[in-house]
Image (tube, rainbow, N blue to C red):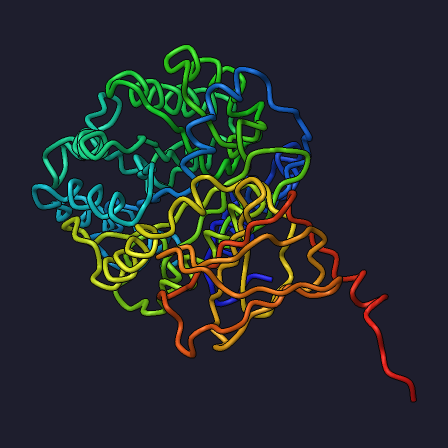
Length: 454
């Protein structure tokens, strides 16, 4: 269960956002009858098999495994979380100072891309427009944008160029919800307002997918206050694929899209559906200067392993300051992750669906008949796996290749003679070669392991 102290789009919408929703639809029985916002991206109710075209478009994404999410906007200048405009009920006239003061320093995006590359990430997704409504690009549809406010230049263009320079795939986040546009809430109960706002929304998306060359990912967010019909999502996606035939899209415009998006938790999809878990490095998406609840590099790597174990991707967020600089703790954590990935990355990038998962101090990935045991709590001396139902041929440290002593009976694989201190940090990986695809059955052990009499 998600820690209740952590902030997610889902919690916001079910809390303060839901209050605004009830105000927006007051007096409209049709709007009031709409279902509540479902959990963001979890276990989608559409078991749609991947089409050949999806397989083609998503091949790179499945191989990439690990991406960088970036929440960056006028809220970064304020430094009190990306939802501050709503949660603190800041009047629009007062909030407008932040876009004016928002002036990222030159080269900010290059630093992001270099950090992502060094961390072992293979794609990036940046907020082009978050809920505050501020557009990070040179749009012709509003003056509330980067070229006409504080930055005085196209931040999306700089991001795209930086990502491509590092060989990273380019993704655009786009929030459908908009707290700035006058029709952003009124569209729920006023048809003319809905038509205006949907035309504006489609127009912004058209600009994004027209002006920057090839875009690899479109990451919709928060469909409040409309459903798929209200957003004209079918028409929206048709336009997207006409402009970008190779793009992949997520499921947050109320259509299935190409992949699901569990947020702040790891929830594997079923039936072969693609999924990507998005998480923060602390408890905030946008820059929150007081948030010091940082994940350790070990936790980040364990989360990445958990995602790829079940066929998912891991999209890990940074929240840069208003000048574009990345908080020092984020840099430290991702640099440590990158050092581990330098020696262990193939156990992530080349991983396949993996059956073994039961251990008190390790997690697992698999490549063919090789089981990778990622020991995150090093016990010293020996490690063991319960209920492995294939024959183990050999074991070695993945980093360095040192052969290890291994024994096996019907219930346990036992690797002994290990050093007292972990030979790799923050997680040590042991490669276990098996004579078939590794399978684990701990219930077999519980039922059959010899017991003593009384």
